[in-house]
Each structure stands twice: as structure tokens, then as C-alpha cells.
Amino acid sequence: MSRKSKEEIAAIYKQMQVYICEALEAGDGLGKFKADNWTREAGGGGQTRIFQDGALLEKGGVAFSAVHGPTPKKISDKLGLESGIFFATGVSIVLHPYNPMVPIIHMNIRYFEMEDGTHWFGGGIDLTPHYIVPEDATYFHQKLKETCDSFDPSYYPKFKEWADDYFFIRHREETRGIGGIFYDRLSATSDSHFQEILDFSLALGRLFPEVYTHLMHKNGQLPFGKEEKAWQNLRRGRYVEFNLVWDAGTKFGLDTNGRTESILMSMPPQAEWTYQHQPQPGSAAQFTLDHLKKGIDWLTYNHD
Image 1 (spheres, rainbow, N blue to C red):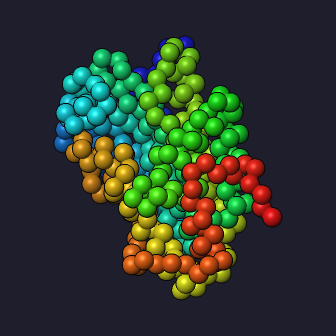
Image 2: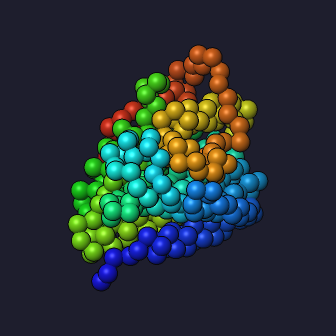
């Protein structure tokens, strides 16, 4: 079995974008994605599909890109690479629901290759609840573990810890949410290993709409009021802080002269910053803050 070319991988990821969008449209039941094709002056382009004003989803984006060209010095220095031509392709997703009881979710699967053959896969999926519900956290992490275990039993514990460290708002000393998995620079040692890593990324892509549709339907009709919406906007503000200050994907896109509108599709439609906001002791908001910590084992969490 020969190794897939970068063009073949891009075509596969483009089909994954279509699959995920169709599944999310079915899960929402009302809204539709609108496609926005774009080109990158330095080489390549993509399609950003934007979702707005659905029954359950307020705003979301599923972006595909396949870009190439001379590697910016800032990128080659950061990645420890020689200068040359790069190729990068992937699918990136962020969804913001109306209901504060439904979490924000993010996923990214990507492939990077240099003209000298240096290559790697990266990606991840993480959940950012406005209100942490242990039952949902356990469900989410169990699904991730099952998917990881079907490829390599070492993946879940390793990539879960990586996610805890990566999705961390350092200036707040809190995690962005309940984590998930994150991996980067997975290079293949053989053609069969290359296919295995690619298949792993595609399994995550297929898992994404399954887990999120479940959470949308489970929590999307729960009651909420002004207090919950205000808290949602505060948590959205934390999401913005992470993406603009710490997220490597955002920085990579901007440093490679990517399309700004597509890079910043992850921003929520509204967000707030309230000076020194403190939730009521014993409230669901306080419970959430108390559990924005690294190292929580959601698989064995006591729900009592």
C-alpha cells in the first residue's frame, strides 16, 4: 500500500468537511451552512462553511483549507525547520450554541508537509461547557477513549494530558473547559503507519458530530434565563482570550498570511468581560470554576 499524497489527503479532508456539515445540519434541524470559497495569494485556498441562526446553534464554522508556498521565517524558526516550500491542509471546527447548557466544542485535524519530505499530523477535540455537567464530561471522555483505544491504548492518556496542558489559559490559571485530546507532530515510520495516523484523524472527524449531536439534543431544550446568558457570555470571553493569546492554530494562520475571516470564525457572536466577577458560592457557575483544572479523571469521576 503506497502512502497517500498531500493532494489526496486534502481531498479526503474536504470530504470530511462535507460529512460533518451534513450531520450537524441534521442534528440542528433548521439551520444550513453557507459556503465561502477563498484563495490565498501566496498559494492555495479553501472553503469556510458558516452556520448561523439555527434551532440550537447560534454560530459555527467548519473550515477546510489546503495552503502552500514559501515557509515564513517566523514559522520555520518556531518549528525548527529549514526554509522551503510547505503544504498544510486540514479541517477546523468551532460551534457556539444558543443554550448555555450546551457546551462550546472545537475540533481540528490537520496535515503538514515540507518539500524535503518532513511531515506530520496533528489535531484534537475539546469541550468547553459554560456549566460543567460531570455526566456529560464522562460521556465525552469515554467516547474519546474508545476511539483512541481502537488505534493505540497509549493515545488517550497521553493525548488527554497534552490537551490539559494545551487548552490552558495561563494568565487565568484555568483550563478552557474539560479538555479532550490534543496531539501534534505525529510522523509516520512506514506507509502503513502513515495510513493508521490518517485513519485516526478521520475517526475523530466522524466522532465529532456523533458526540455533539448527543449533547445538543440532551441539553438544548433545558430552561435558562438572563443569569445563565450573562454567565455564558463571560465564559465566551474566556474562549476569546485563549484563542487570541495562546492558540497555536490562530497564530499559524495569521503568520502564514491566512484568511483572517476564516481564522477568526471561532469567535462567538457575543462575549462579555465583567470586572472581578465572582459567582455565588455553591452555584453551578462556582462548581464550573472549581473544575477548570488540569488532571481531572472524568472517566472515574464520582457523580454523586
